[in-house]
Image (cartoon, rainbow, N blue to C red; front, top):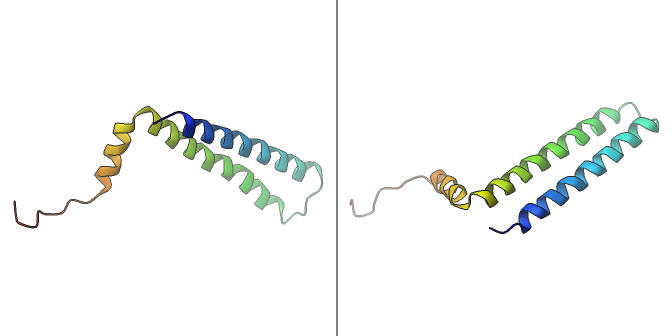
Length: 85
């Protein structure tokens, strides 16, 4: 696997962090409605966490493609041979 998916995931992760930090700063500095502030905080904390999970999966897939394939194959349930072998 090439480094392109890892680079793409890293750049999108950095953009999400910057956007969430800007949104959170704007919500705190400019008086936001009290009902909207908890939703903004949860969103600004949850989006980078989801991006970090995606970045971690991309790095591990690029680092060990065979191990990633083995994990995917282990998820498939085994079926008995149709002729009983």
